[in-house]
Image (cartoon, rainbow, N blue to C red):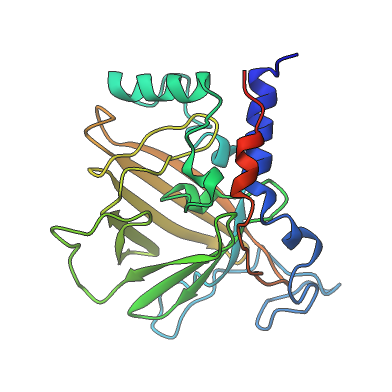
Length: 268
């Protein structure tokens, strides 16, 4: 008896998330009150409190954030059907990945998710949030992912993006403030990562990702993501993802040791 395409998608997602499953059962410092969080009369975090500010007046983006797992499956989840301006090459790649049950996904072999999929890497159960650590000159993003704990550095010291970067999974990131939004530009990808999991939207070494972080209030943040990749898309396209603050908890290390299990995924 052969498995259906939808069954195989579920199997792949389970394989990708398997390595971090322990973090759901054993989170670090669970229910320890996070210092500095405003609270309601009953002691619960007040997620609707005003956006906090740093000493320099910039919005304080620090905290642990998570989003809906639908974007991990399909980054263009909120875009109308056929809204992603794919060139024929991109359409062929997406069709091939869907028809072959996504067997070529490097993340299933413990490789990093890439950008922006790393921003969405979760199971809907807050298995894979990320933490923002902010200074005036540098923002660090710490990730729980099923491909081992990894991080990104966003430099705010005025340096330009490299002209000839060494290709990498997460690229090179620089940022600047535009009003109350932190705008991050990233280039220098190796072209091996996917933008999402079930669709498998492609990314090449020519890709550029622009992320716009806007904290709406204490507990809610919008992340606008713009994909520009002239080898795969006829024009840049943009999605906006909602994030929620996770209070009174902490990240936990994730170690991917289950890449051998990927060979056991059901296939057609």
